[in-house]
Every structure is written in structure tokens, then in C-alpha cells.
Amino acid sequence: MLDTGDTAWMLASTALVLLMTPGLALFYGGMVRSKSVLNMMMMSLGSVGLVGILWALYGYSIAFGNDVGGGLLGNPGEYFGLAGLFVGDYGADPATFPMSGTIPALVFVGFQATFAIITTALISGAVADRMRFGPWLVFAGLWATIVYFPVAHWVFAFSDDESGVVGGWIANDLAAIDFAGGTAVHINAGAAALALVIVVGKRVGWPREPMRPHNLTLVMLGAALLWFGWFGFNAGSALGANGIAAFAMVNTILATCAAMLGWLLTERVRDGKPTSLGAASGIVAGLVAITPACSSVSPMGGIAIGLIAGVLCALAVGLKFRFGFDDSLDVVGVHLVGGLAGTILIGFFADPGSPAAVAGLFYGGGVDQLWRQVVGALAVLAYSFVVSLVLAYLVKAVMGLRITPEEEATGIDETEHAETGYDFSSHRSVSGLGSPRPDAATAAAAAHVPATAGKEA
Image (tube, rainbow, N blue to C red):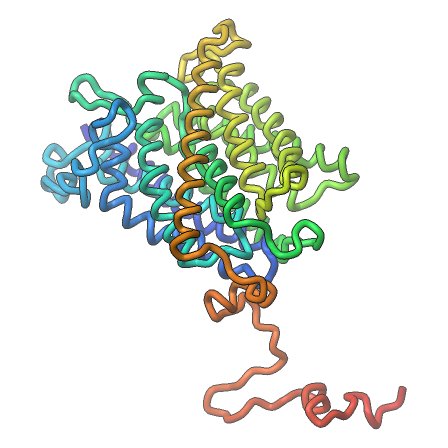
């Protein structure tokens, strides 16, 4: 039966999660050098356009169609082109159109589309400054098709005995808990990022040359938008305006606060100073870690998970220097490590009084839920890493992956998009007023005369 309150909340949640991808573009865009900011943002926005269309064509069907492969794959043709979801009288009679619980099925389609979009966009931060835009889109389309859509079926497609629908193996057979995407989103994207950077290779000059963020203001704004949108991500995954959504919302607040403090404390002890970049990164680490756990742990458990994730991710971002893989914007350190931490820690902190009603190790449940969480996390990690590695080598062999060293020195914005993020020119032409008037310094330079000539020292 249609519930207008649930529907309104899910429409809002869909908009919130979609906003996260432009937020990610700002977050990533501020972290790169100024000559790469537009390309970085374009990789996120390109994912919106590409994955959104693929989702409508066959992605939703693969993820949420009736299982045709032992819990591994939904029927790609069942909802191809969203067929069968537009029947009925949407203007008048809710009883005539397809429903998903208490909301129209099309609302659920749109909500899950935003998950597919941002998961793909997350990968791009690992290859900032050097991966060509065309090959990125090809890789993103293949990855969404072969990796994300099936894994979403594993994790998010639940069986329904009444209708005879059979879902994915992690959600139903393994019974691992992943409320909003610790495995399907963050471990999945983080493992793919690791595979892609191995194939693409290091930036010119890394790690000898400092490659600092060019605009920390953008980073902070992006982190704020991600936190704002994440309430749709986590609380929206309750699929209704209900108590589970409230539970997930509070855990999302508390874990994120704790993770930010954990990251800043780690920086203070290790480096002597807490940083704004650390605060923004800690926010994202906390959001990542609580994503799978927000319906299964108490608020105090959420704080513990956030604190642990903040410290672990702050330490993990340094692993790229030890192992020599150039993960430009720490996708592996934050999303893979944070996703693993949040998913596995459910096995310890799951509270039987939470909506998930499962007891973890610390609540007398033994290791039963813990082994399920570990198996689910490692299965997604292994599948995503291996397939992503194959896809990256395939795209590299067919069309190449990265720009040349000369183009990298010039800047990927100019070489790939013929644009720059910032125009630092000292003069402007005014339409209809003829040629621009040079300032004194420009005129003096043109005449090879010092600008201070004739002036007293």
C-alpha cells in the first residue's frame, strides 16, 4: 500500500544521494593540483551521465531482477529499459502501478541509481592527474556493468517468499549485514581503485615531488556536502520515514564526529598539528565505516566504530608510500580500509537491541556474525580487484589509459578538455569595446622597459 510519507522521504533521499556526487567532485577537485581540477570534476560528473543511462538500460535489472545464477546475477532482461515499471495509472490510482514496499517502484529505481553513480565516481580519485577521460568512461561503463551491478545484486537484493523473488547470496544465504553499502559501495570501489592504479602507474615525480591540494576550501565544502547527502544514503536505506531511518541517522552523526576526532588526534600525535584536510578526510572515513553498520549497532557502538575507523584510515593513507602504489586521493586508504573496518566491526559491535536484532561478539553472539561479515567483505574485495585488474589491462591494450609525461606536465585540464579551472590573466577583453587595454606592467614588459622606469626608488 502506498505511504505518502515514506514516498516523500525517499524522493528527498534520492536527491540527497545524487547531490553527493557533485559534492565528491568538489572534494576530489580541491585535493588535486590546480591544473587537474576540471578533469577531476569531469570524471565524477561523467559517471553521473554514463552510469545513470546504463542503470536504466540493464543495471537495475541485473541488480534487482529475479536471480538467474545462484545468487550471483539478476535477470538482465526482466526490467530491460525499465520495462514493466511504467504500467498503471500513476496520476490517480496507486493500486495499479508497481510498488516496492510502501513506495512506488520507480522511486526505488531512482534511489538505487544514485548508489551506482557515486560508487563508480569514487574510483576516479585514485588516478587523478593522469588518466585520460575517454578511457576512464570506457572503464567506468565496463566496471559498472560487470562488477557493480552484480555485486549490488549480491548485497542489496533480498528474496521475497510471497512473490517468489530470489535475491543475492550475501544478503540471503550468507546473511552478512550491510545496511547501506560498506561492501557493495566502499570495499567494491576501493578494491577497483587499487587495481586501476597498479595498471595506470604513478604520476610523474611521485613521490619525490610534493603534490599538495590546491584548494582546501573546496575540499571542506565537498566534505560538508557529502555529510549532508549521506543522510539520504544511510537513513534513506530504511526505505521509509520510520524508526530505522532515525536510528541510522543518529549513528551517522555520531560515528562521523568520532572519526573526525580520531583522525585529528592521530595527526596531532604523529605530525604535531591537526589539519583541515585531516578533518575532511576523517569525516569521509566515518561516513564510510558507519554505512554498513548504522542499523545494527547502538549509538555507543557507532562512536566506537567511527573512532577506530578514523585512526585506522589516518594510518592507512601512508601505506601507498610503503608499498609504492600512487593512490592520488587515498581512495584505498579511506574507502577500502574504512569499508573493511565498518563491515567487519559489525561482527564485534552488533547490538541485539538495534533494528538488525543481531548479537556480535561483544554482546554474547560469539563469532557467528563475525565470520559472515569477513566472508562477505573479502568476497567483494577479491571479485572487484581481480575483475577490475582485467578490465584495466583490457582498456589499456585497446586504447591506452594515461596521458603522456609532457601532457601531464602541462596539465590534464588543458590537454584533455582544452580548459583551465582558473583564469589568472591580468586583463580581459570587453565585448563591443575593441581590444583590451593592457595595464602598466604588461605594456612595460611588451616594450622591454622596466615597469618602475622613471620612478624614484
